[in-house]
Image 1: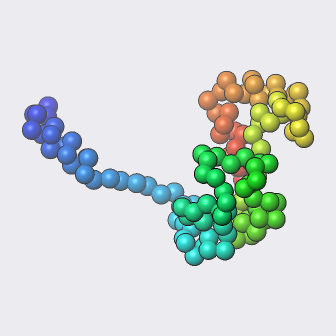
Image 2 (image 1 turned 45 degrees about the vertical axis):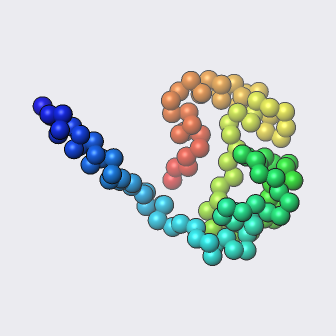
Length: 122
């Protein structure tokens, strides 16, 4: 069993040392030079005239146009995936579908629901 001094030593050691593991797909990181010509993702800077908000949504004035998304996807080597949440089927619009909505409602009860819906498998 640890003594109090041993506990303090261990706590200090773990508090001062950090460990992070990057997955292989995280080896490629964006740098400032990667985003120089893309104001939509410029680090720490908003496009001129934009108002800082926590989140931008499709339809907002500063949401990137389809052309900008295509340019961004090209700069990433075509790896950008357009995610459509399964619950989009529950709302009015192009993805509305009662059967898919019910499947999403039932699936949401499973802890694997998000994994099964959003992760692409080979």
